[in-house]
Length: 317
Image (cartoon, one colour):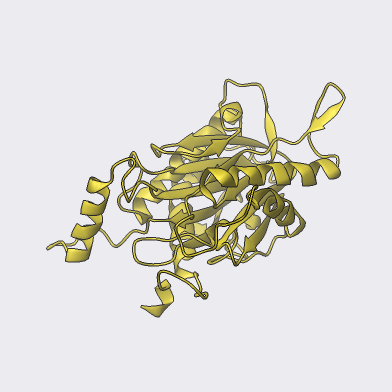
C-alpha cells in the first residue's frame, strides 16, 4: 500500500528544500525547511516544556493562511534567534507576506536543549544562532545530511548521541508524505520487555525523579516537521500534525512528559494537486505516524562521532 520515496527524505515532498548549518565548536546547529511557495501549515505541541516562536498563528482559527519556512534549532531558548536569521535571508529574496507595503517572512520555530553536551557555549554577548539560521537558508537543497547535522548536531539521547532524521512515504493515491525530526534525550526500544532490564528501570527512574531546578531539569525533546504534497486546509494540517505524534509514541519511551518540548509542525505544499477523499485521508494520517517513527529512528542511527563527545553513537554498539 505504501512505498518509500526516492530519497527517503522530507524533500521527496515537492516544493520543499532543507538546509543545515552547524558550529562544531559549539556542538550545535540549525535546520531550516524552506517552502518554494508559501505552504499551508499547522502545529501540535504535546510536550509540557516547549520552546517556540510564531506557533499561535498556525492555529486554524487565526488569519495567516500560509508560511514560508520552519526552523528547528539547538541552543534551548537561545536558539530561537535562528528564525531571525532565516527571516533576514528570506527578506533579501523579497519573500514574505505583504503587510502595509512591507514583506514579512513567516517563520515558525522550535528548539531543543543541547547546552550540556560538551560543546563550548562561551559565545560572548550574543548567541550565534541568528547567523546559523542565515547560513542554513544558503545551504538549502533537496539532498541534505542527517544524523549529526543541523539541529541534531548536539542532541543527546539516554547514553547515546541523538541526531537529525528524515523519511518519506508515497501512498497509493500518489500523495507523498515526509518527516523530519531532531531527537534529543529520547530514543525508543522495541516495546516493554519482560522482565524489565535494569537500563530501562534507570530511564524510568530518571524521568520520575526529574524536578524543575534540579540536575535533570533540561528535559527531553523531539521537534519535528511532517509534510505532504496533498492539498490541505489549515484544519487538516493541524490534524496531520496530531497524527504524526503517533510516531513519537512508536519510537520513543517515554514521550510527551511535563519536561519534554515535543512538537510537530505540519506543512502542505499542495504540489500534487490532489484533494483527498475520506479513505485516502485516513491513509495519509496513518502514514504520518509511521513515517515520523522512521525519521526519529534514522536520526539516532545516523549519528556520527566527533571530538569531545560525551556519549557514543548508535553504530558503535
